[in-house]
Image 1 (cartoon, rainbow over the protein chains, first blue to last red):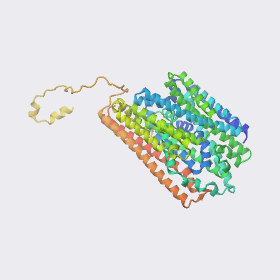
Image 2: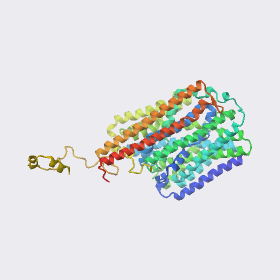
Image 3: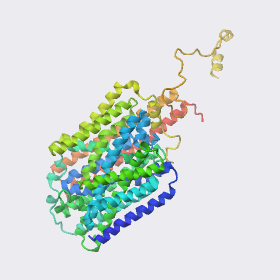
Image 4: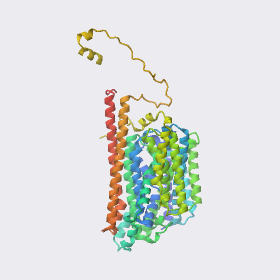
Length: 488
Length: 141
């Protein structure tokens, strides 16, 4: 590793991000531009941006670290993230695009005709968003500490400042350009080292016996059925409830193109996870000594110079560092955009000025949390965010799109029960230790419970069903006139 | 037009009989002049359109649920295969056990295939709806 080279790589990513962001600012003119890039972003461009935003510190650094630490069980996380996008496509992509709403609370208010439920959902969106930004800032601290021995606060502050600046200056159009670029940077930053390291390793005698590198007790057969199943339910359903994922669908021109975009996203993130998993497999052979909690997440940064001492390894490390910063910047900026949209409309008057102020607020709170807490395992903290989203917000979105009987009271009761159950379960699991599997992985029972509460309360409250539910469902599911089909 | 056609099929006696033509009787419950909710802008929803729309929603939900079930089934079969391979032979390819390689790479193509199947099916459902809705309106512009 070469600190000067690595810091130069970080600076380059930050500069390119800012320059592209400023170019985007020239295109930002109206309030609509600020919030959703005027809904005219093309499918491939938009798919790159969505993938760029989705692939966070958790997968860029955390996935290989987890495979190194716990073995084949680590692969379930990216499988769940990718399959989460499949569920998003199946159940909500086109209807949410047609809903005509800017943010998730906008959708919930329009569907259920209730300001109270809107406020509750805004609060949940805010908590989920903040929880998700914290691991990104932790990732940045970790990276700068490992590659340049800088104090922990530097990385978090740099990422928070850059993100706030770009979002406040350019809104979503700038973010789309930046994130599309960052997807390709992230993919390159893992693909090139993976290919080079595989070529180098294939020419050497294996330093570690495959039986030791890939032991059966860490292999696919050692999986615990309940905790893996419950984790998969949380990851599959959690994607639908993530605030920054939904806001992206409003940028497609129509429902059909939202679906095509999502198919591309599934392919793009799948490709990235396959490459990232490859580095995890390489790490098991080449860096078994890093398999310790706290250290494992740094393995992607350490691998190139370990296998390739000299300038080539240094250059590859710098590339990985650049990709890692792209990951922190893109996910946090996507989150800040969607949270700022929610705050500016719920707390302020929804103007461009209030959007800028909200962007600052949205970055400061998680920065404070990140500075006060230490970096935990990146993948599992991201997994917790998915769990909270899956238990509280996903049921209300799914029922809102597909069941006309959902009422405001039903939705509010369900969201409250979901959020409380999830919070208490995680608290209980912290106190009881990892042995309490039902509490550590509550998705398998908490999501059905939330959904049941929503349905039962809505049925009891059925005379309050929104009078325009039928009309709104018609709007969600009707294809746009003659715009949906691609030319054949 | 249809009244003329009906009349031409009547016998001469029927045709001679005088018919009183009146406006439709007002229904027992008058149509409300205002709605309690806020109507979205756009044309009023016709009965035929409602039937077609409900058909479309059901078709889309069936397709989505079918794709989900298919995806889960194929994934479970793959998982079972991986477990069997891990417990039995587990040959190593490029120094990595086959079960690990399958776990690392084999799920993504399945996810992509089901995504493509769904997106095509959903567009087909919407095309079918449009054809039906246009026919229902007598193909008026």
